[in-house]
Image (cartoon, rainbow over all chains, first blue to last red; front, side, top):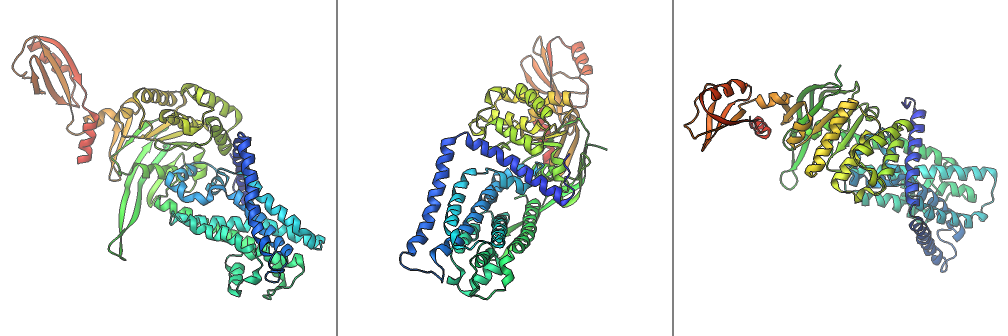
Length: 275
Length: 315
């Protein structure tokens, strides 16, 4: 019998179960190595083209929103890595509606592992590492412009972990809407993939209202914008308080609380309607 | 304490319907209404009823997928909707029309995945896998992806999957739907053996009354969310105005046989059909007929259970 009485034991159980399931999917994918490597390299190429678009823009201008290409690459790298890692970790969460219709969700509910863990670990795709590699490459190219100190390195690591958590939560929150309307997956994409695309640019090109929304409503600015201001030693053109630069974990934590509530509410609704 | 205790269990659904362009009306539907029954460990219970009678809703409440809107259910001492994950370790569920296996994975990997999800001890896992794979004849299919299996093979694969963690209770929702006669027979044989040898409690919903006749000592008939019959199979037959039939082959054609306790319903040459109440014994009738007539042969037909149930629904 597994002890899941304390929150810590519960989380440990959830994480352990996640990896046990994910590892099996990795093993299954490795049964077809050619397909695996083709998809992985394909992922690198497609996401690479994504950055080329920004690069091309800089053949016409020197700075964009007051930021140089390398500075934008730093923003781009940070959001891409966090977003792609989260995307890999959420697995089939985006397909909740489909799982409801097919009855797979019912089957998951009769198993002893939390439903969210099962959904996330379902069809875990290691080949998405290809897309993460692109983000890493862009970041590595931009990294030399930062005057690295131990403090900055710490902020970077904390921001990366927080960023993954923030995107993970955004994926879960907007996928949970499918418990109410099963065809809302496109709506979710607008906030997840759309959010990542917005964050690839400096906030200075957007109106103040957009930046406020990305700080207080959907706190994606804490994934890369505020931490990068610190890494680059720049002042915030919007005049936000300095401690925002270190507030990524706080934003992540608050989002985790909201996500937990939304997810529970969604599952509760499912369990009271059965559809 | 019984293994499954259901007390005044109810489940309502609010269905919103469009009434005109903007107005909506909501209707409350009682899928399950004041349902009560007990199931003891080791029983094999058939849970039957017409479509929409509340069978699936009951099973969903007993597995914790749905919460009840009234009354209570206790399974293995646990409250399903509150202790769903704890309960999951003690029950097995097989949904006939869909698989809980993974389409793209071979059976072997699906079972391995379940071993990890349930954290089944190695020894238990190996023993169960060996036993069930042999009995269900899955040996040659272990490396085939689930999507390439036939319906019957997949069903067998699903049942083996549901039993890997040694559940005390196995719920089967339409386990023989779409299977051919041979597969049905083998599956029933397996389930009977499972019940006898391991003492696994079986609760199955089905439309196939032969499943019930072959497997279940007890039948619960549900209609409009309420149990309309709960008892052993023979008394379901005796229930209502069902009758048994004594078929008499006389040596010569004769006028309709006149005896106490039975009436002639059909005559065809020397053969006559005598109906008598399902609760009555055939012995005195046979004695009477044999005493008064030259009998070439005799046989008794049990009432068709489908007719009996149809009459129950019609009430």
